[in-house]
Each structure stands twice: as structure tokens, then as C-alpha cells.
Image 1 (cartoon, rainbow, N blue to C red):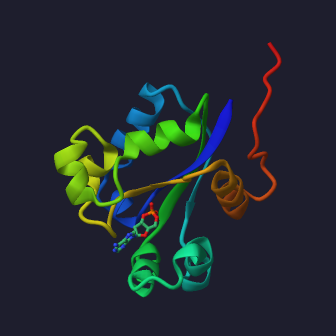
Image 2: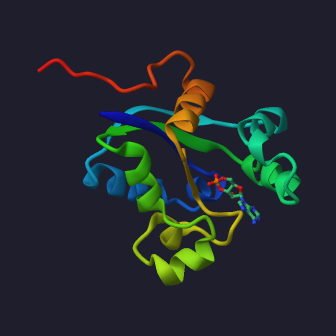
Length: 146
Ligand code: CMP
């Protein structure tokens, strides 16, 4: 089993896409292990996206991510990180609408910034991002006793 951090961003929540996105998540074999609605402030949003801090879009990204609450979830299934990244589609929602019409970003994203959802891009990011939002909840591979 593997865990990843999924997020429905402010535009996803305000646009009432949460129920549909959760339906896609559960239909795709994920378990939602933990979930929380969080209002990020500029400091927390900047920390979460620190790897993008030198990019020209950073200030705008922080403004967007603090414009309303987000829903963060720990998702679990085999190959969760890759599977969730495939489901959400490319970063640029405009591109998603043409090249990945069945993806979540095609369904509810607007452009390369307002792209509705986030997913960890590696095991290292998943561990960091799960820790960021959920503290010491286990982020590593989980063995289930049968
Ligand atoms: P996400 O997958 O959460 O990771 C970084 C975020 O930065 C990305 O989604 C977008 O919201 C934003 N982003 C990435 N590229 C751009 C861009 N070229 N212009 C504006 N925002 C971007």
C-alpha cells in the first residue's frame, strides 16, 4: 500500500466539485484515510510551495491558495502517488481539457494556476506533504494484517 497527499484547492471547493471528486477517488480504489478542511495563511501556503518560491507565479499562487479553504486528504491504495497524478491530469487545466478530457483538472480546473487539485509528485513529497498537514499520521508504506 502507498499513501499520497491530495488537495482540493479553493476553486474546487467554492465551485462545488468536492462530491464529484470524492466519487472519482472512491471509484478509483482509493481509501480516504484522513481528511481536513484547512484555511491556509500566506506563511503556510508559502511554506507548502517553498520549492516554487523563485518562480514568477509564486506570489499569485500564494494569493490563490489563501483565497478560501482547501480540503486535504491522505489517499491510500497500491501505487497511490502515480495513480492520483494520472487521475488529476496535467498542471495546465486548459491542456488537460484537450489532451486528458477525463481528468479531474479537465473537469474543474481553469488554467495553469487555478487547476482545482494537487497531488504529491514523489514518495519524498508525499511524506513531507502528509506531515505538513497531518503531523505524525504515518505517511510511509503501511502493512495491513490480514
Ligand atoms: P500544483 O500541482 O499544486 O503545484 C504547483 C502549483 O503552482 C500548480 O499546481 C499550480 O497551481 C501553480 N503553477 C504551476 N505552474 C504555473 C504557471 N506556469 N503559472 C501559474 N501557476 C502555476
